Length: 111
Image (cartoon, rainbow, N blue to C red; front, top):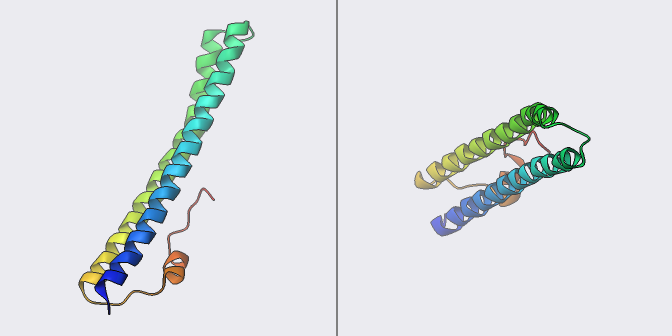
């Protein structure tokens, strides 16, 4: 077993999980900000009052907050799996191929 190759596998998988997390989080936050800006245009044009605007924002924060929470939870589960892979390498146990490691990842509830 070549330890450097096994550690490279875990690094590639960790980078994949991190990129997936940052992409999902960026998408969710930009969606929320876009929605807030679109609603604010309605306030400026006089179609909505500020109370209605904040009411709509409060209502939309709940689903976006849940999606952000579930994205963070999935990322945390992925980090736990990376940690277990590193422990396997430390105990001189070989890892499967990258394709098999990707198949074993915790399922992302956002996809």
